[in-house]
Image (cartoon, rainbow, N blue to C red):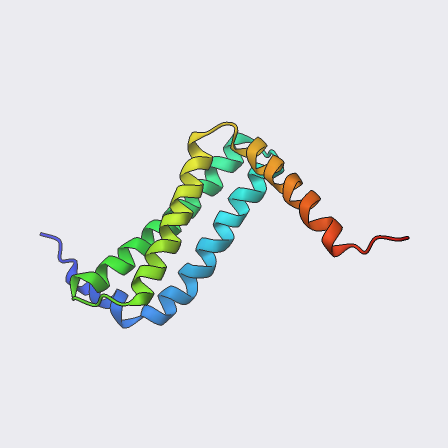
Amino acid sequence: MIEFEPLFQFSRDHCIAICAFLVPANLFATLQTLLMGGFLRSQLELRTMAIAAHIYALLMVLHVMTWWLVGVVMAPTFILLFLATVCLAINGWALGDRAFGSWVRSVSVAAYRWIAPKLIPQKG
């Protein structure tokens, strides 16, 4: 039988290092999925990045679960779980919807048209 307790203990002992890696990796991988969708990259590239981002998010969920197994229920565990859930949702959407790239692009253009006039001073 496989013993998971040493793996769980490793996860709890090295929490700071694991979170210091997983949080930025999760954010950058999901951002890269959004950028690949917005730049209308090939489906193979988009799916590859979304799957990689899924792995980071699932690792974060498993890390949080190791803390919950020993009874540590605090704000950081919920914040990390929320971050992982949002990243899983975005990357799952990228995997499942072929119109993902078009939607990201249209939202980006709309946001630029709304923000740009406020940032660039008007002459006259």
